[in-house]
Amino acid sequence: MRCPFCGNIDTQVKDSRPAEDHVSIRRRRFCPACGGRFTTYERVQLRDLVVIKTNGRREDFDRDKMERSIRIALQKRPIDPERIDQMISGIVRRLESMGETDIPSKMIGEIVMETLARIDTVAYVRFASVYKNFQAADDFDKFVSELRPEGQAEK
Image 1 (cartoon, rainbow, N blue to C red):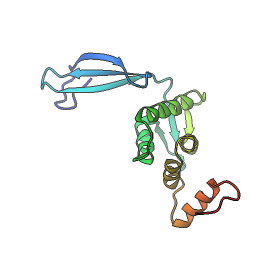
Image 2 (cartoon, one colour; image 1 turned 180 degrees about the horizontal axis):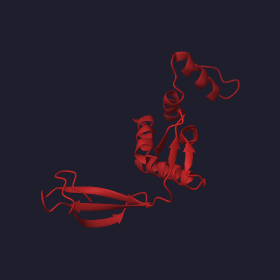
Image 3 (cartoon, rainbow, N blue to C red; image 1 turned 90 degrees about the vertical axis):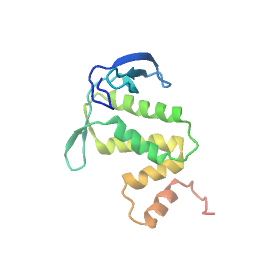
Image 4 (cartoon, one colour; image 1 turned 30 degrees about the vertical axis):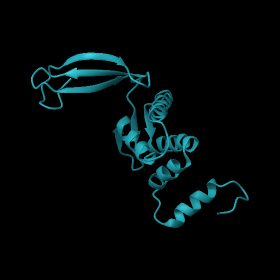
């Protein structure tokens, strides 16, 4: 593993243990060249996934990219970080177990929205506003009104 500080490729593992989510290994590393210490995570990847964008372009699935967008939607929400990690791992496992290596970005977005809707409505609306490209307040109003049960008036 290359040292993020000096670029040395000869780093040493000082400690390995399961991460909090128990689906990855946390490794503490040390660089003998510069003395830097850093942490890496190792997780199982069942297959290489390719995302098919709406314009037809193909790109490798990036778990970190999906995780960043989910964490932004959940920012300042009362959700335990461990619960977020479990949710992300669950989404990735679901994608990997679909049997297909090529997955439309629309399907990934729908799965993320479905999962967020079960966990936190505010995060769900935040994610949807970017995913569905809301342009005006009316877009929010229409989307939120669809979330309300029949007959429930605005307060």
